[in-house]
Each structure stands twice: as C-alpha cells, then as structure tokens.
Image (cartoon, rainbow, N blue to C red; front, side, top):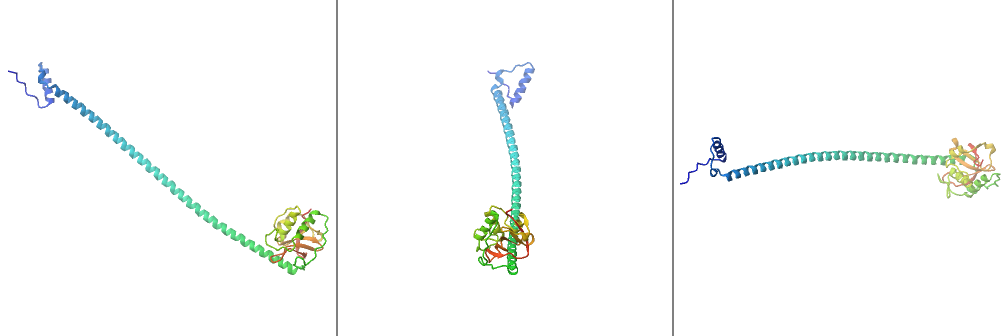
Length: 273
C-alpha cells in the first residue's frame, strides 16, 4: 500500500517554507513531494510579470517624454506666433505712418505747386502791366512789327550783328510769357535766343542777364547792347539796334517789333565783349 503524501500547502510560498524547514531539520523531502513544474511556472510568471512591468514603465516614461516634448514645442510655437504677430503689427503701424506721411507730402507739394502757379501768373501780370505802362508813357513808336523802319545796323562786332539779325527775323511773332522761340517769345526769351544764335549763352530771366555781362552807360550804347528796366533789370529787356531804336517783345497781345528806346532804363550791358 503506497505511503500517503503529506497534504500540500495552500500556496507555493507555504510549500517552499515547509521545504526549507525540513531541510533545516536534516530531513530530505521526497522529490515527488515538490511539484517542480509549479515552481518553474511560478518563476516564469514572475519573470514575465517583471518584464511586463519593465515594459509598462518604459512605455510610460516614453509617453511622459513625448508629452513633455509636445508641450515644449507647443509653447515654442506659441512664442513664435506671438513674435510674428508683434512684427506684423509693427509693420502695419509703419506702413500706416508712411502712407500718412506720403499723403501729407503730396498735400504740401500740391500747395507749393499752387503757390508757384500763382507767382508765375502774378509775374506775368506784372510784366504785362510794366510793358503796357512803358508803351503808353515812354514816347514809344508803333507797336506794329513794321511800324518803324529798321535802320541800317552798323556794328564792327560780328557777334552783335548776328544777334540783331536773328532778332530782326523774329519780327511779327507773338509775345508769350516764358517763351523762347521758335514761334513766340517773351522779352528775355528773345534776347537769350538772339545771342544763342550768335554763340553767347545767358539765362532766361532779364535780371540774370543784367547781372551777367559788363555794364555800359546809356550815353555809350552800341548796336547789340541790351537795355533793361526795373530794379536789377527785372522788368524788361530790349536789344538795341542803333539810332535810338531797339527790338523787343513787350507784353501779351503784342508781338516782336521795333520801337524807340524810352526813358527810365535801369542800365545796359554788352554781351559781345
């Protein structure tokens, strides 16, 4: 009859404890009293549980790292977006300021242009009034282009003769403010064009012409001299042709003509010296 086996412990741990106790008492338990397969199975389960726990911890650590990294990148993205918005706001502000400055500049430029047009109109009216005053009060001859016969111009200077010849060829052409040919002239435009044809340059303003060349007295005039009226020669200029006559373009409504030199001249210059 087989020897009865002792009852198994309730748990593998209890059996292991009993085995250890028997060994300590010098007793050797029979091999068949210990189920080695259970020990091995328990060890494997413990190992698998440990591996699973390690994998879980690793996965959790990786997840925590990913979440932290994602949060950091979200924060950085938010900072970049905020910085770009600040830059965009600054650019928009600068653009608005530039548009405002441009509008202000255009407004000021329009005002300046209006002032220039007004001054030009006033100057034209002043010159016309001065020319009309000279025509009515200075003992001038006819305002017609052929009202006075051209004298035989005698000048020892070829430049003066060329300037007079050019001016004579313009007789009958209309006065137009600020014009210098070829179809119309104002007073300084005529003298400038006449001497340009003779090879002498000068500005298109009677005052600058008066200041640009040697002065001569009114008692020593020679054909080719320029005669001026107004302060600093600013009102009118004519080209002297001899015999007390000159060629000039007087004012709007008149034309280039031969007329007598009248009084009140500011002085004369000799461009051909």
